[in-house]
Image 1 (tube, rainbow, N blue to C red):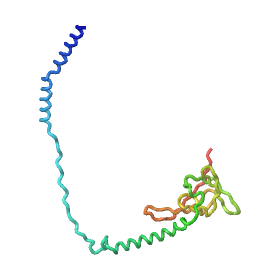
Image 2: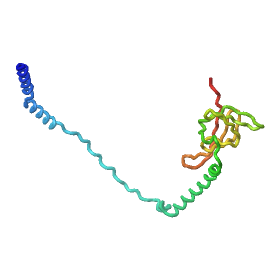
Image 3: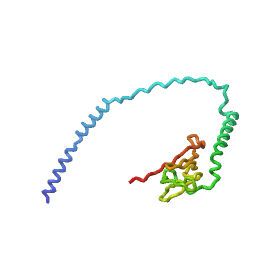
Image 4: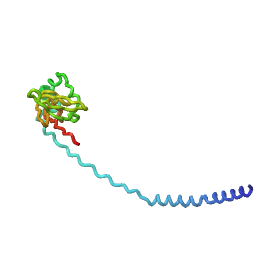
Length: 180
């Protein structure tokens, strides 16, 4: 036991002798030398752009914050609302039909029949079959059926364009043939 303790002390002294401060001094001297030799490279700042003032040449035009400009804009907006409202107002006043709660891409035209010389389209939605006549409504965009033939149903939809104005567009529902 004494021998192992003595051996442990000898090893400990060798380890402590290896941590001599002379090595630290060499490393510190090298770090200081490297720090002094290294010069940071900073790119020069470019000169600021010269500001050239432009004269205001639209003094004779309508001032953008004048009451005249505001009344012209309000008249233009009210005329657009009146024309757009004529398209949408009748659609908002009527009662919605069952197929107006489904988007057109979830519907499939699976066939058409004649009922009393009137064409009737057979539309499948959520595994249910609906009969659609001219004048019925389909889809989320106030789509009214205008034409039915053997291969497609034509609709007139009322949608908003990129500016926010209500416009009419034509949409079709094509016959979906079952693939094997």
